[in-house]
Image (cartoon, rainbow, N blue to C red; front, side, top):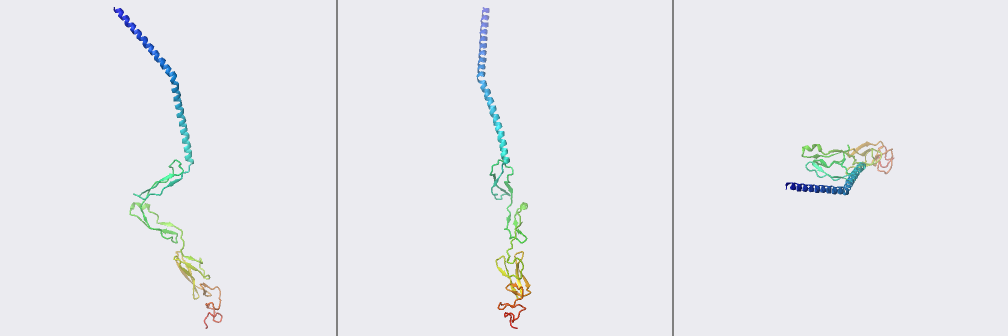
Length: 246
């Protein structure tokens, strides 16, 4: 009876081993079919992805080089807004590159230190070719940022002389800063010549004319002319009826 039971067990184990082996064979067959059918596609996809990634990398490198070339050849043109009001010793502005070169190199300053100085209007331009003004502020630390109080200018003498130089033998006149005209005139045998100073003032120069003075200028030669309402010092009534008899 025991032998018969052992024989039945061995038979069962043998059958189970056969079944397991068959299942293992079937598994490997299915696995082989899967790899045969799908593995090439997987490899191709991986290869394609690598190629695409490589192409993108090359494209990025080319684009980067092109961008660098464009930036190098691009001339920046900065357009800046007006400075803001001075607040807390700081003023700001915004600047944009009109040509869109893509770089902030050489970009103008966007923030500057400032102070609220109170300045008077510039004076008139002095004959030394300078103008001045006065600026004040309460903050001591802003002294280094004080605006200029002296600057160069081109002086224009407000006094105008028609002769441009001293000429006793040509009648002339000058016009002062208030547009008042002053003419040369005679004072006996003396000529009162008007001229302009460097500071715009009207000057009087008195000069004794050798042959007398007439109509705002010195006479060049002695002339005794009747009825010209002038009697030169060397003329008499006989030579010039403008001279009093005797």
